[in-house]
Amino acid sequence: MQNELLYEMQNAFPMTQRPFKVVADKLGSTEEEVLALVQQLKEEKIIRQTSAIFDTKRLGYKSSLVAFKVDEEKIDEAAAIINRHPGVSHNYLRNHDYNIWFTMAVAPDSKLGLEKTIDILKEQTGAEDGIVLPTLKMFKISVKMDTTGKRAKKEKVKKLAHKEIELSPQHIAVIKELQKDISVTQEPFREATEKLGLDHDAFFAIADELKESGVMRRFATILNHRKAGFGANAMSVWSVPEEKGEEIGRQMAEFSAVSHCYLRPSYPNWPYNLFAMIHGKSQEECDSLIEEMAKESGLTEYGKLYSTVEFKKQRLVYFDDAFKEWEMQVASSK
Image (cartoon, rainbow, N blue to C red; front, top):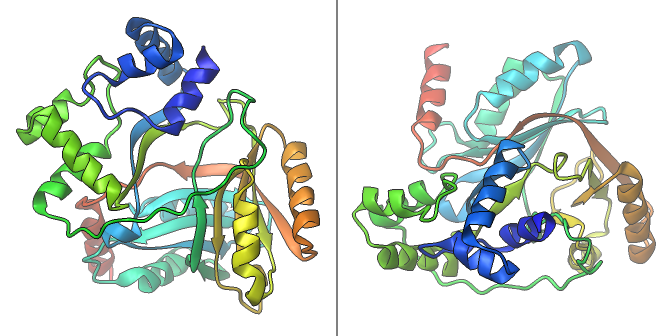
């Protein structure tokens, strides 16, 4: 049952008063068995977290993928400096001259802004060079490991229409609770509803509103990929003619093993403008898929960046004072 449970919880975790019972019923198990197995998978660190996944941009944050070129002897120190920023959710060492790759976000009320923050980190780390790679077009963002081996090789990526929403203080209060890792109990949302003074129906109604607006992408479980058996991830990067960017981006996003697919800017020192993140059980599996993608797309100029060290991987904590505190520390150090 373990593999089916992991796939089910990654796909969409039920937002109901007793979600583990809903999962158990779907798998033909009992609530007690599911709770015990989830607790075990958390203790084994196969499950990282079960919480809401939000759209950073729709929350007013500015973000980008960033790559630094750092001298080998300074890599650990540089990674530690980068990790201290609360807006860095992912930070990896990759097999390229641009060796430190991280995602950076700054809060809506940031005094420094995104570019200035990246400049400060570049100075603090002593990076020789850096490239800023914001999303120009997103084709897919959906991290779901195929733990069952039953997933089709390709899948249609749905284009979702979202309602506009103006975030109220109550929305933000609910977001702060939804972004927390749930407890492995019969009623994991009870603590949040009691804290906010809401009943479950009102709490879930606000969560549904956040989902319908696209502010919340989904509520789901994220796995520790390597511990779940997916030992390799490759950031495949492609040089695509501008007029073919959308067509090929949508084509690549249909591969189930692709979790993220974006168009980003290219530069004289970085010719790649299409990024497709691939997860596989081995490097050979990733290599094989990339070759298939190259053949299907007809692209000949591309690269494969494998992560060799994971410096940081965690969810952003939105509406957190840590963002202001980091900027105040920077200001006071000058």
